[in-house]
Image (tube, rainbow, N blue to C red; front, side, top):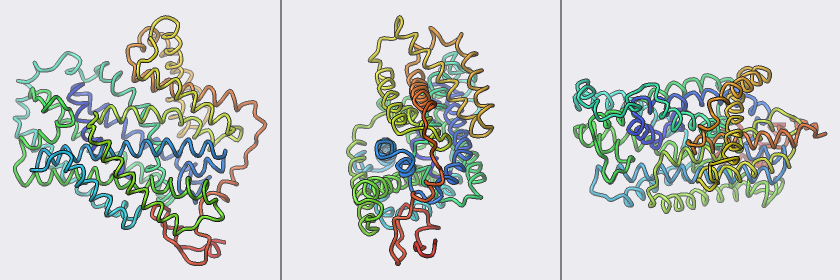
Length: 510
């Protein structure tokens, strides 16, 4: 779990945040990302209880609602995983082009080919085995490399002589600019990652149920320590007046490493980044394969009763090849990794309430799920890309939705741990407290406003369309209908399924 959440993109983005926002940048990136791992586990326990044999969350939505909700969640995961693959390949290409004779495109091909080959070998099992080795290497490397670079760059004197390179906001640990542009949008974005990301759901379905809590607590600590530590290289670069080549913030970490590390430690650094990007890229490939196998072929093309496990396996592997090719093509565009992560997280924000409500509330209908998500996306996209003029009545309406989004995000966080009543108290209280400060103010922070609007619109519409519903869904149906495509006498191992279930026949389970 630690290796999956720590990816090369998170290291690069944390350093970019430190370079852009100063000393509080990596804290806002790493701390909130770490806490979101912690917030997953109470929801994860409920999801496992309701759907103990599922492979994907979208598969559960098929049983809970129907085809449109399933394909909506599956489609968002496909988009997110392809973007995740692309950003990891960008990180690998940048690193290889900096530290070897190969250029960026050659580096992307090398990383993509390596990850694809070993993941094709054994899918999810290969992903988990390599994750274990990679996280040990990453944690060891960070403990050595980051302190070495700091002292090689003249720490602590560099922080005294380079203080003039920082603005007042960059030198302020409680920077409002860092919180509003980085911290607050990321709080919303990572909660959406936690619920909408199939790579997380896959591990949730695979880990032993009694180990869900300690697994996620361990990953919280490991992620926070490592990502914040690496992000401090961006802060150091800011103090040193370091200018990344071409102004590309993705170059900060590899160029800092190349400037201050001797050969042996540079090789260790190379292993650290390659391990980080590989551990998440193989997870994305496994996630994409399971979506195409279970959701597209298993449920919608062949049908659950007629699905052939061997065909599913072939489809899963072809998906890995196709996804890798697409991600390599997109990686050549070399987009900013930090912007990509926040955008995808906000996009998934439209799904958070409908998905969670579907696991707890019997009244949520397929129509409410579908309409609320589409409506949220229809508002989110124009707000995020400044297609709506943020003036007059329009700006006030967007800010009102964003203020409601603040309460919804905090309320959802509280709900997982403390239940409905404390969640309502916190959510309503946060909305009331935030309102006087947000009107006339949030319109200047497009990324944050768009993220919050995605939450509020989907939540309001889903609730209003469901609370008068006469539906009284029986959650026990999900456990009976989700999972188990291997209906033959012979055991069949699927690359992305729960290893505890794939080697038993239906007769043994009965």
